[in-house]
Length: 457
Image 1 (cartoon, helix red, strand yellow):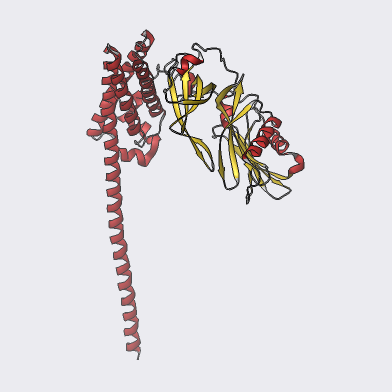
Image 2: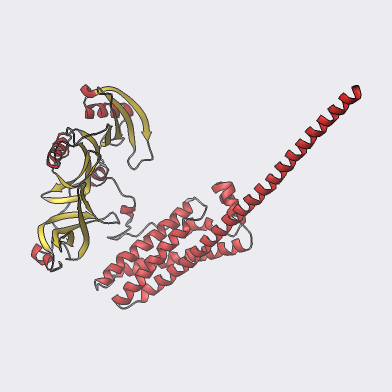
């Protein structure tokens, strides 16, 4: 009996040992498979980074070539073609630069440089298109850009050599991060990325009336006036904005330091137990946004009534001379865009959005970022052509319905004073903007009227 029991125990132990061996074997196989997968992934990442880097090198070489050509181009037609190619190559260089696994001040400077080359060349190409010759200052800027492009090209060529000889790898940078990169560049050639900061040390951006002037890159929020305030002051402003009689409870949600406008965030519960979220700017204590979370189940008031209530609300909150522009209706709520006006000139950069409930006209939200970024008194005296002269630029088939003056923003954070003509061609509505200083056609927008609102494209 003892022998039988002993045999069973041995069998049981043998079975357990077999199970453990099988499990260990499975773990080992899985480990090998995982290692191979990780190795394949690292290799794929390395190949991807290598491709991005070599594409960057090629496009930077093209940028240098087109900058050199732009310096000796003698006709506006060829100049426009060269500068357009330069704009394209610089854009593509930025795209591949963004794919590299490095975050550093050096790359920020490189990205900024390529950004300015792209936008400046586009700005100058427009001059050529209008048969304007480049000025001496334009040519000097191009010459300076060319000098920096040569430095960048040399640096990238040296890095390419370091990469080919195995003196560094992208995988190491990804694994160890920027600190390891800073240490690693000391062990490779002096002309590596560590030299980019020195290359761009004297490069502070182009100063010109166009795309990337330094003062526009560091865009000041000119409508954000006043001194910095503390959270308790912001809390009082939030309560007063809603009305203390409407506030049952207020809670702080913290300080959003990295927002476009640094704000103190609050949540207010009103007497209907609805939640109202507010953001108050640290600088000046301005309302940046307010939003009430409640459902709207019916549409009773008209668009005209909603507009009237929103405009009255803006005036009560200190926003004077605002003009409605476009609106959008969604789920019983209409969001209306308002632009500031100055002597009947519409200031499109100074936008405020107001949300109105269509069941009872309650103001459910406001957003003032555009207004706080841009609102100021403009010099609107730079009108050099008359309205009738501007009309000559328009398509002869445009049936004009309204006309006036407006300041419009550009993609480069500049502004242009224009004549604004609204009209129709073949039952389709358009907005055409003619520069009030030189008569150029600056922009054309298509107006789309839908049951839910008026939009532009």
